[in-house]
Length: 635
Image (cartoon, rainbow, N blue to C red):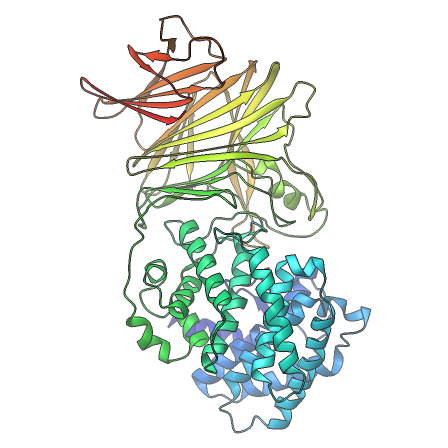
């Protein structure tokens, strides 16, 4: 198996003190190996990025030694584990500032879990002594004392705190021979329950708005559930409920290729293994639909050999819906079906979250026929002062709108948020034939001539997306739209049309307005420490007063035109109030969309298109032959 080969190769590198961090759930991947020639220097930083030192001190790679030992029974993996853990215990002073990069509470918590998982994998060896286990337990006890003591408001709300409390819980269950562990278990469990209530939003999304860290939180909570199941302990309801909430959020956000969107500080990571573990722990048929059909290699070592048989007994159940709105977090997922060849749009309008958040208000990702075309370009690094990090956090790296080339959310370095655009209430209407979602923000309310920005998306299933960008103002401004294109896509620009050519699919982006289109180089990072060049398309449009921009995205090269919007008495409505667009489909049917920007006051409140009178802010009219089907999307 490929997985076995990779584990053994990695374990052999670790035996040579040659470290590489390339596991899919490594929070900060580094595929460049570094080899210590003599003793391991645990606080060393070879690449100028302290994240490498943090990864070195989380010790997940010792789990690979344990797996390699179980696969081969080669004692060299046990010898390496004992030698390296002795080196760490004997050389790292967790109370010294010299070793601060080895001793953050997040590392202490993760380390508790990884050490114990490694111990479990080596326990079958007759050469592993109780004396060695006690030495490890004594060290973990001291580290847990630090975790019990160092708990404040930051850790209460941060993913750090969940990781450190999960570490305490796993330690307390495994090393119950220590007199402190009963008290530790009660304290950490109470803290974790409070954290799950305030950190995990009702829709299952972690408040920090980064799937990468949301799933590290989930991984740690799963470790608690797994060890409690193993020791036949009753798992608290709040843990099971939290696993279900986050597991379902993963199912909802999962792209057709099963990967999470690169929202905030996230990598392009396959979600199926973690959804599989959720499905197994909860015996959940819907989650199994979102995971693997069988227990995967990674989950086997997490859940144990009995999971292979037991997982097969769980049926699969496809969700009853296709699209869903996660309103509390401001994430909306529109799709035509759950399929690797499906269409998918993720729209974002919600709180920025923590320092892991990016300037992504009104951003969207688009996948068509299973191919990603328009995407969030990732995070790349956390190094302060790095121009690519600054760019990737900014509004300019997201598929959103910009006014007067001024960012609506402003950052200060790698983690600071100077000013975040306040998002306005969102509205959605999700159905079988079409989906609608809208959102806005006040990021430009403090301009000399203020602008209130909205984005509305109408998804006509299966292959038509109409983007309505709305700018409410009394003055003149320049408006830009940004489209970050996946690096493997070819681009053709013809007047106001963009053609994106994929492996098996083409899509067309049509701008109704007479915009200026330009192509620029961008940065695209699928994982930490890795980047490539991509192309981004930027539109520019100058306008005065209230402005509506229509953008039509389709799989087929279709025709469209602007239509006049009248009042019910036949008088013309100014475009600063309402605009309409007619899209001609390939079967010669037509779709008419009318968008109104204002609340109508004393004047006549009805609109009229093609002698059809209606009332509403967003209206859709399907024209099928001689039949007109009126659908008011928003009143």
